[in-house]
Image 1 (tube, rainbow, N blue to C red):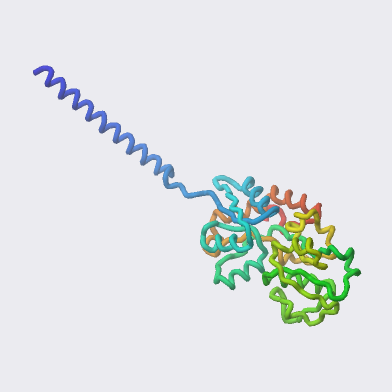
Image 2 (spheres, rainbow, N blue to C red):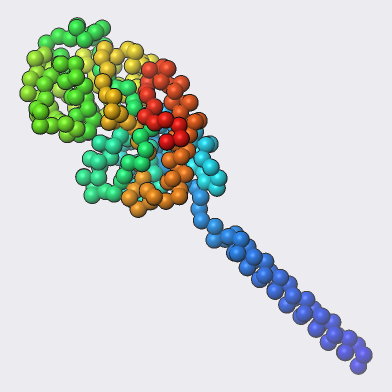
Length: 285
């Protein structure tokens, strides 16, 4: 009888102990939820970009961004993916294009992308394996220009700036070769994907429009161009882009602050000395 009573007493103590442990775990879980343990919002901001120095800027901004935010670089391989990813809400922002290119994408895809902050203006121009200067250009030269609409317009506007062609007064950032009114050098134009323009230079095309990012792959810089763009308004500055639905969020504001930080400005200033680009902002804007 004594052993039986002792067994019931021990059983009761075990049940009480298990109940107490269950209550402790419940209270601990509640405290974690109260502290935001399992419900903390994701503070990692995903930014799509394509190539250097744009990807470098994203990474430097990631180092400069204030807590609790962090930046994840999503590197893509062409000029379509970064906008599609942003439009489909697969990333929070992108950094790979100028505003006219973004606007053209919005028109084609009924998109809601929006420019947040111009960061730098790439120094574009024309390179030639055949001519040493603009004075050497011959009649009938082949000219390689980008196949996308906004960069085609930019390339044609550079030719007009140097009085090599004349465009219709009615066009601007939507100019095409069909809008050329005067072509005194009888240029023949070849449309090439932006990423393949460097190959056109290597193939011997007499005049090739290009960005420093791409022409750098064969050891050339804007110093090697026979003439450069003249654009004081930073119309084609590479820009931080988000969507209409997240542009006013705390995450995008923190991202903009990081992109206009002293660290990013110093990096761009170093590249400016090499003639690759010009910063399009002042630190702390």
